[in-house]
Length: 216
Image (cartoon, rainbow, N blue to C red; front, side):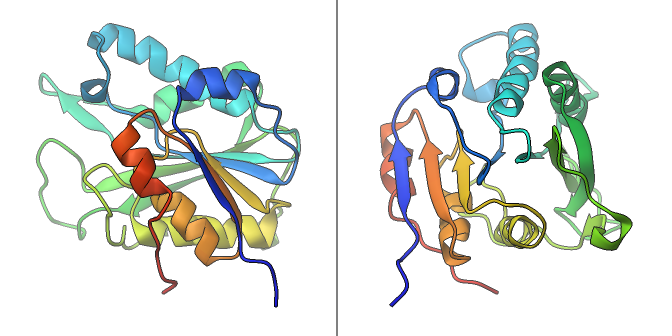
């Protein structure tokens, strides 16, 4: 019988953990950075922190590995905060290049949403890895999929990410340094990938250790 994929969840600060970690080429980073409402800082401080956190995540990826971000914009004082722009600033500071930028539909086309847009960003970066035209995939994912909690990466987006990692990268372990309740970790295990999560909340870390998802 083949070995079951492993899962380890560390309850600690993600940035400190990333600074201490040395990840091999078969480890891919896949995460969603937290909103300003989740952190005890001003919006201006959060913008700086967010970009620096994205840079730290990207710097933690080995040269032939990838860093993937799932982010949903927010509206603040009548203006959109474009998280994909902030992530790309961090990635560029780390010297990584954009391999793809996909739109994940959170609501059907034509539906008006409030506070958050009807789409999310799925961005993939790497230092050395490149994708040929033959490795192209859909730029728009029609459904987000079930969310295991309010700020989760939807199951359909998680599964699409795992399929990409298996088909186009050397990844065999998914690392989510802001793992929440573990949606990405559970999806990775369902696809036969090992998973490592980091989560500051004791309650969410406990759930992240046991959450399971089925393939669709």
